[in-house]
Amino acid sequence: MSNILGNLLLRFRSDQRGITGLETAIVLIAFVVVSSVFAFAALSTGLFSSDKAKETISAGLAEARGTLELKGSVIATGIGSTGTTAAITSIVFQVSNAAAGEAIDLTPGNTVIKYSDKNQTYNMNDTSEFTATNVAAFGDTDTLLEIGEVFEINLLTLNTTLSQILGTSTEFTIELVPPSGAVLFIGRRTPVSLDASMNLN
Image (cartoon, rainbow, N blue to C red; front, side):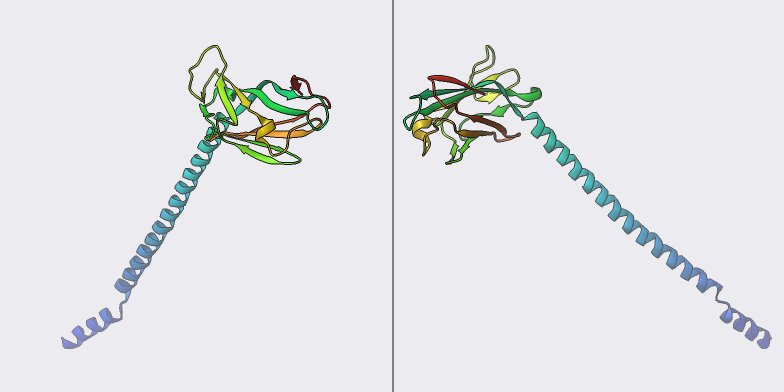
């Protein structure tokens, strides 16, 4: 009897099937846990990427909706005709909101106008340097350029504001930089002889 019991105990001791099953279960659980971690990491990265893409799209739409466009001509006022005394005293142009976009704040200081030519670069950001006025038949009296409004930008007293006068046959660039939206570039050249009022093409 003891011999039979000893044989049974010996057979149970040498049978490793239960331990093998336990090891397999542990390995399977480890695979599931590792897979879950990788899946979480992949999902988090995907959500972060899609969030960044959404922010980029929103920023692009805001930029496009806040775009200015030039309406009509660029008119310059001059004193003198030729020589060193001839100078442009003011430049006037009109802008509107492209593609029925968002309101753009044209208040001097919030919007900056950068003037540059071969001799100088100057930033205008004060009401003594430029004004922005709604000239459309409708709209309100604030300095927000809204849908349907047309604003007239008047660069004032350029002959005293600039360090060197803007005279004849000079190429210049005006950059209208709003607080949001794209920058409006205007490039023109003054004629060889100045008149009291000139359409700069």
